[in-house]
Picture (cartoon, rainbow, N blue to C red):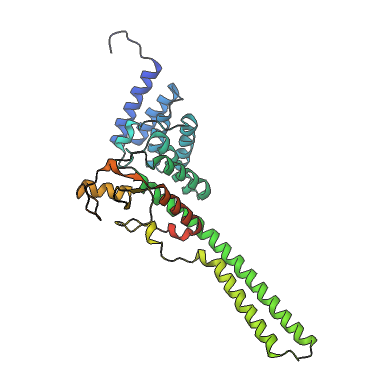
Length: 301
């Protein structure tokens, strides 16, 4: 800086951000937070200052502050922007834009205080923004998915338990009503009901049992259909892509294969480049529909 040169607030804020990044790299999170806070004081409408500070709060497990900063960043940045350079200092977070990172960390903060419904919505938004954001390179779909799936499974467990209890209570009430009707009819006929009436009552109870088993079968874990699973990882799809050969893979898994094994389709052996992968929207929609109906399939362990 030349002698007598005066820095604008914007340039001062950028320098403070650089200082914060340097402190973060040295794991001096308190000092980094102070630097970002000063930058925010100078330019409070720059979303990356807020998300950078949220990253530091996350490292210190101050989830309340993470939530506050992420909410502010999201309000300031309704559209995704390019990835901030602090992300390059955060392992695996280089891949999230400021907007995606804000939704992702907001979701984590909400999950910490067991606000699962709102936390899931934030993670779903991060997933939506991240899916296909970097079609030929690595992204954070898998990391977001793991957090989202755990939360969805917890929500499913709660609703499934409540649903099972309600179905069982209703089933018992219906069974009691059928039995009472049979005994009442038997009493009114002074014990002269024939075997046909008894058989009819038994059949009604059996039919009732089948109806309630059918009503609860979606909550009974089973095998996920093969067509909804990646042929390499065997896991249910998160971000499915289809090759020119017509084979569908999980994006991250097939990109890893192309990078580490070779530029060919692992099943057909046909030559394959990352740029040839196309999102399989039909399978993605089918997966979403299946998960909505079978929440147990979110289980990741």
